[in-house]
Amino acid sequence: MHNSLLAAAGTRLGIPFISAGDTIHGYQTTYPTQSALAAARNYPLDYQLGDMQRREQLEVGTRGVLGPLAEVGTKVLYPRIQEGNGENADVAAAQVRALVAGLQGGPELNPRSVLATVKHWPGEGAGGEALITYDAVTIKYHMIPFRAAMEAGAVNIMPGYAGSSFLDPGGPGAGDSARILAYLRQNLNYTGLITTDWLPSGSWVGAANAGSDVMGGADPGAPGFSLTTFTTNVPATRIDDATRRILRLKFQLGLFENPYGDPVNGPYRFHTPIYTALANQASRESMTLLKNDATLPLHLNPGDNIVVAGPRATDPNACCIWTSFFHQEYGSKTILDAIRTRAAPAGINVYQDTAPSPRVAIVAVGEPSYTHATSWVKEQPYLPPDQLSLIHNFHNQGIPVVVLLILPRPYVITDWHTLANSIVVTYRGGEEMGPATASLLFGDYTPHGRLPWQLPRSLDQILRPGGTDTPADMVEQWDLPYDLGATDAQRANIRTTIDTNQPLPTTSGNPLYPYSAGLQNWH
Image 1 (tube, one colour):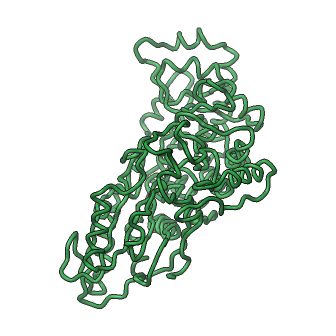
Image 2 (tube, rainbow, N blue to C red; image 1 turned 90 degrees about the vertical axis):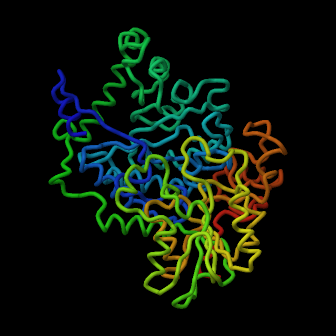
Image 3 (cartoon, rainbow, N blue to C red; image 1 turned 180 degrees about the horizontal axis):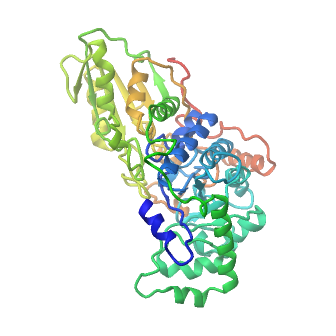
């Protein structure tokens, strides 16, 4: 990074660049994803996490980040619901406001800020990366966190790939849609930068003419494309408009005075014990105890045996999504390793997969890490047979079963939740997910987290039988919160409440576990 910044300084104009990546839940220190933070709802802590990331990025001169997400996750089958803020728009607003302020280091952009890129406009939680389905009423709900981001001083917004059947019927994705970008400028009075999602170079012209200012990820040297092509097809007034916004922002960041980081002598350092403690606190506070029949906390004697099983028990990446580059470099413990570390001082024997006369079986299940597409078939949000059989096997042996559920998106768990003595939801809990989980099992702290979504009772609350992820097959309304198993009258009431800007009850529908479920003690 430093050498690249030096090279930029040596160009004809010497304009420094801003490097921004998808490190959306931490830079060197990886904290829980936003959906996990939405289970904790500790907004001062969210600010501290954003501030921690800012400090680590300043060390190396990485002055931007492609986050946070301002999405409200109202569609169960949207894979990237794991990156969003749950289905409560007010929680999303508070969380995004705190993260933006932390990344900026205050209420507005300044020379010690990291540039937050709020995404994915205009709210892909209401449909996903193909089509956003809200209408004149439900758009109000999905705009709440975007407005909050602007109130927090956000000056960079990223449109997503999805188009909107309301804002631009039949039109292109948001970054290429003049109507969708005009809604941002005209209806929300946004004056900041618009940065596209990752684009092929052939899309530059359309995006720029639609109103995008920065072309994300495109290669101007790609075959069949040149900057001459771009400047010939985009009016100079549009280029000047975008250039003014970009330069103004760089002056606000103080980049012309000091574009460099200082990893050797800088004041903040990487991955300090204080930062690790913040990540651990965030993971602890997000842990959600859905069910417990007095199995937890574990009451064991020296010499007792426990067995830890399941594919996520030894998965070093289950804690995080694809852009967590550094967590393993600092010795992030898997669930199995963390349980062994916590059990050893008490003289408790921890076995993997099988054990002689175990007092309890701890089974870690859920999806491995993924990005745009789910690891399992998207339309099958439930445990696969091999994971389900583990729960059945221990239950059938009469061994108490504690299920650790890595839950990046809402699952149907109806077929097994009665077999588990206890269920702990870890989400994508960041690099401290393993230690935080082990500490909870042994009663070092009481559970605090609450579900950020409803959990469906059955697949037919989501899709028609045999259906796929298309509007024609949807049963839940992609743009409505709290509507799993809801009646038509309940959905009408949700819409009326949104339209009249009244407090929205979270108790509609007939889910297996409601929004905000989670024991706040052990029973």
